[in-house]
Image 1 (cartoon, rainbow, N blue to C red):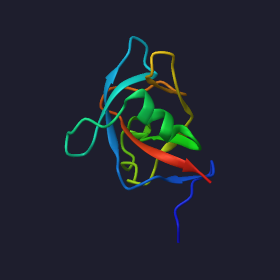
Image 2: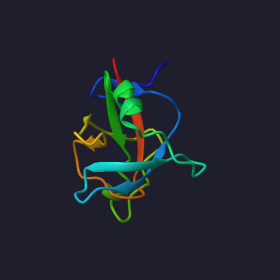
Image 3: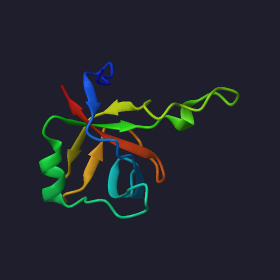
Length: 107
C-alpha cells in the first residue's frame, strides 16, 4: 500500500531534511541538510526542477501537547513552496532552523 496524505501528496523519497539557514523572515529557506549533516542541493536550477507538482511536508514536532506522543515519522503538514526572485525556496508557512522537512509529490 502506498502512503498518501489528505492533501493528495505522497513522499518523494524516504529522505527527511533539516532546515539549516533562513533569510530575514521565517519562510525563505537558504539551506537544508540531510540526516548525515551534508548540505542538500538548493540552487535555483535544482529547486525549479523539483517544484513541478511538489509540496513541502513540515514535521509538526512543536505542535504536540506537552504530555502527548511525539509525531510519527510519517506525520507531516503539507505546505506549498515556490522560488523567489533571488532563487531561494519560499515555504507557505513560517519555518525554523532545525525543523525537519520532507519533499512531497502531488498525485
